[in-house]
Image (tube, rainbow, N blue to C red):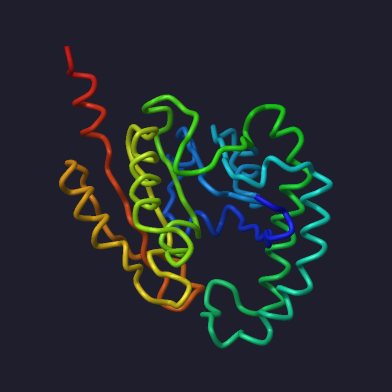
Length: 236
């Protein structure tokens, strides 16, 4: 990964709660965030005494390198948003200025927390489709704005391998948001993946969320992996 090809974009705890329908109990569980980037989710959950690890390839870079890239791209992204504001739903977030403030605040919290979080192994350089964690390491595994969204950039096999890997390290539930691609269409990979998960015995649900910013992106995929854990524990 080359940092100059990355556009850092950080979401906050409130957005994660709305995207993934997270309860207070969820926030006290053992969470893995896949592709969290420079979000403040880890920082804010940690402040609530939660147990969370975030993984992202961007975590191979230093605090100063990430901050420099944020500074380089923020004004460009802001201008693009203003030019294309009609492509988004201004419900949860009311204006471009409010959005930019939310993003910059989230990334500022991340930057301030980054070195401490890396030292405590809350931010780990890992990337799908291979994770370095043991089976059933987490209660809840989340993927925000990566899988399905970038269907044109990552093929079906990548999605299959990544989602099964997330299921491997989870002992209760995997959640993925959104289910649309960058063209605001339902990902072509969703139905094949639902069939694969069903054939492997996983229970899946598509759940309407309280969050919509990208037009039509108001559903998450929930994968219940609890039966997998029961089966593994029942082996002689």
